[in-house]
Image (cartoon, rainbow, N blue to C red; front, side, top):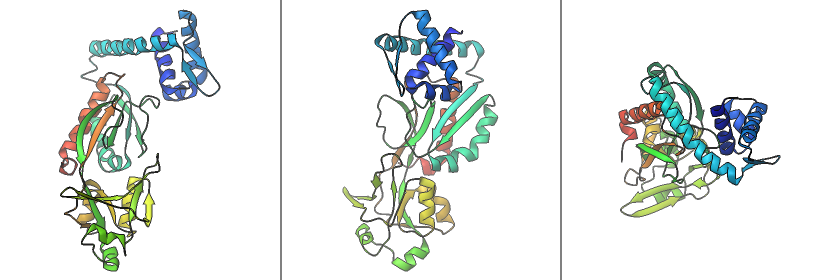
Length: 304
């Protein structure tokens, strides 16, 4: 049995937390994953994992072995890359996770360019507004907006998201055009976004000269997916706040009207994020650089 493969399998079990999740991410039968770890323990003559019916935990010896194994695997991959010229011709399967709007409007329409440039990279593209665990979900990198909550992750800032307040012309004809954010507290319907993970509802937020106003009283509709949120506003459900990147096509077609331009929100940073225990491999570096190029080419994604 290949020692490197057994080491990779053990590390994946530690990161995924269960043999089942590890097997799914490695695209191997669970029995094979179990066999690799058992063979590794037998060869080392030490117990690496404590097994229960629901989860595995790492023993003291297992934790020490995992730390050294991760560094050794990274060095091995670096050596392989340098010897096979993988930096010039990156190859392999790349697991990426992206928010729904960025995927639909930016990444997927241009993905053929990346595939033409790097034909030996195969992509598993996860599209979701949910925050994922890069380690346990075995994802190579994610593109996400917002300040980083996990400072242990490695991030490269590639752009900014600017938000504007919008509604449809028909809605404004029926309910009137607000001249001040507080006008939205009566006689208007509010559409807000809520987190698909925490269920937190985000109010409409307005900033001017140090003053911050939040409008969240009894929203008419709350949506937990960014594309559906935009479509709800375009369908005339009420007043909402979306990014200029999302709004621009609808503004140009006259489907939406920008409101309260003197009350903007601070720009939201966008990052490419990847786990610290994985060196920036050639395939990840290729995708990160390509994604940064796409963001840099779009002025709506660079406004500060």
